[in-house]
Image 1 (cartoon, rainbow, N blue to C red):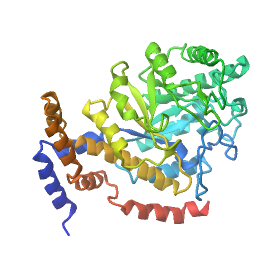
Image 2 (cartoon, rainbow, N blue to C red):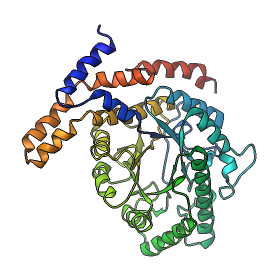
Image 3 (spheres, helix red, strand yellow):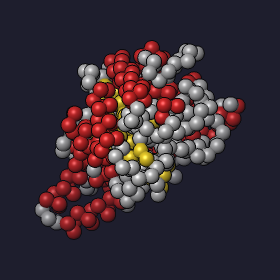
Image 4 (cartoon, rainbow, N blue to C red):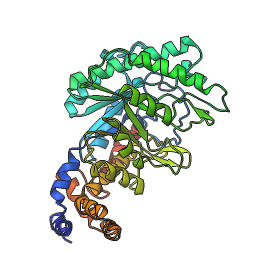
Length: 418
């Protein structure tokens, strides 16, 4: 059997016939960071009250053994997953993953010191960090409303939590000299048909205005707002709709978060990327996989994932589109879920980088849609797999399914003993 260098040489020649430099494509993708979500490792429990209920219109299903129950376990699991994935990586933290050092710390009392150990660890592992206020799984969110709540007391609580989170993010970004993207998602909505939608959304505007009133160094922190079409227990109305957030971020110079699982089942975020970037500097993506009305399946190498990556790379938007993952599956090995989903995001980026975009654009501008379609279809059967294997080899991670043997060994030696 030919070795990887021989197979790659043949693939390189095949792509070169269409004007594609495979070495340059690999280098391009290797420089694009992908933010891996910490909550895949512990089913979104966090360390505030690890045995508490997950609320806020989201659910994790399954009881596969081996979930992380401490910061050390979560970091160890993340490191194992990251070691099996090529490319640059970041970790996205929720506020409930604070290192409280054994103390009980309320949501409004979290401070930079509670994330100092995360910063030290990230420096050691050469990771960027992203952040998220946790506006769910708390007594003050029990009725499904937070920043849009009719009660000023409840709104004040969540405003202070978000302000605290923003200060933490700015601290992390300053320490790492690498801007944190802080994503705000709230579960607010109604199970049945509401009457005063306007009033709820007006309260939400007022809350966000208070959160973002203080200046923040954009070299350290970028704020992003995430919409959702519906949630469990909020089927009839979501206060933070796509239209609400599109308007708010454009008016206030913030980032729009597009989550691939937060729209109607046939509505694709890939088509929204170019439109959003015409009117705002940066956007954040939360890449997951919707299945009917469930938004958080492990990312697979499907048409939409490839199209998302193509939209980013075709426009040269690598610096303007922040790629984050957001899925959680407790029905399979959690580390394998991380690896499968993140490797697929990397595969999609590489697939897009290998596209002969210049030739395709030329055909399109000339009105030669026949040649455009013919070349797009030819790209589907190009020897992409050989380039992927070479990319993995260059990054020092296993190719093919060899990574699964390492996950199984880790499961036997570490996870099974928890």
